[in-house]
Image 1: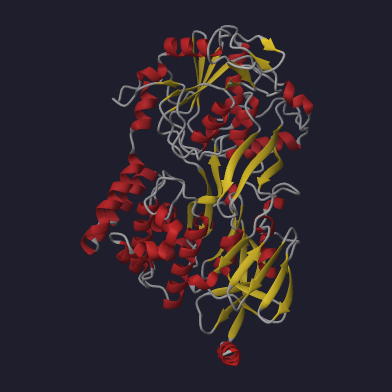
Image 2 (image 1 turned 90 degrees about the vertical axis):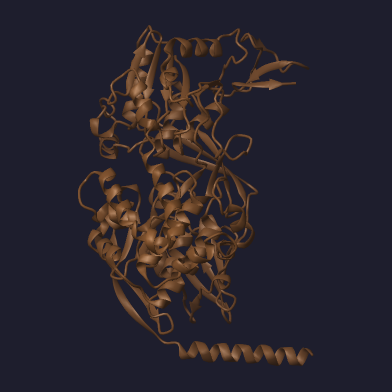
Length: 637
């Protein structure tokens, strides 16, 4: 029996070798656009059995994404390779089609171009923020990707390993828009937030893709396989989409087989018709809808670039009108898509804005002893102004409020200063009731400036690790991260206002501050626990997923996608939003919350492990029984 098995194995390997020998390839030097600027060429392989699918060597890809670095490849056995990157190792077996690394996040780390020596963590590079370190539990974890499951072939020779371009781009993609794609004409490298949309960089090619009627069969098959791989491994399972349980158990492909309209959606995703493919992606978007982080609307994203006019709402209505053809062709998919589209036109934010006591373009409002900072979005950061300030030696005033950047850090600093310098103001309400998210750098800077934590918690579902990330904030804006930054304090009772529109960073900041003992007012926030991870399809169209690489939690390691429960609930379900701006009632609550006699008395938010009773009196240590305050939190014993 043993001899028979060996003979069978030799036969299989021989047949495989013959099949591999029959496959030829051609090498093309393809132009590279880096952030919209021409940057030489890169070598791609096109194999005879997959003529539409480009391959790239792992060494060339590393040099493409992080110039000046490479991956050394050693063939350790027939079909097996050791890959030594600048920060970690990995192995590839082209017979079993497996990639494995004991430190996958380090192996794929591209964040050195943002901050030298930085780990593979989200951070946009704002000069007033600096990454410090991370804590991982467990400290190490092995990640293995089995590409045979998806029919994705890895290839190699005596000196190099070759991945399909999109496959290796996807496993290197990070949260800060460091990724690359091939659009059939050139390789596009995105280098960060300043150029985070491949269609914006190549609008003419985007129009061609939008208007294309067909694609090659090998491309259609590979595109579906790659989509299944990406969703199975990188979709963050935030907690609300319809397919999460099935994907976790069986993967996307089998899950579609078992749900209503799933086989039809699968057929459309694999179609050589581009219109059908777009319909399949939009239908999958409905099933993976998670509040706003996942976006598979490929034709809408292209239409935003190629559509007529500047008004996005007008473009959106035109796009919806064009989708009515689906009603005749696939009526069972049409109404769910239109219902999803209605989420783009939720008028609640307009009504809240109308209830505000200040004009809609004002960011600061004061009434009595309470001020409001109306903050509808985290960013964009006015990087030009901030970089100029830091590059100029941090002399003079920090960047002033700019009408084009009414959600920049300058707006936050302006509100903090005005409230702190006004002897009448005791309370500052950070109004995030219409805040749908935005820039992490701003969020972390705001947290620390207001006396909150300089760290946050997350789960990495790809590696199975718990993560705690620490950052430094230049609170005095002198260009130096040091102990003097801790001396910057604002003598204000700070509260955060939220509604169910408060999503992503609008949900993240309330979570951080509530854990630190700050009061939250309003209605339960809208969730959004995952960071965003961008990808580019094999054809060159961009999409994004809620990322499995960073699913946010509170300090008890509980996923925060269900939103943050307020300490002071305000019922606005009837459509009456005036109570959000009942300044007298909110001021009374905040004073009681911070009062030494109040049950919620918060003291010593900077966490030096001293103990206080509920009247604010310092204790020698924790009492044997009772309720006391330590590090700004109530402790029951």
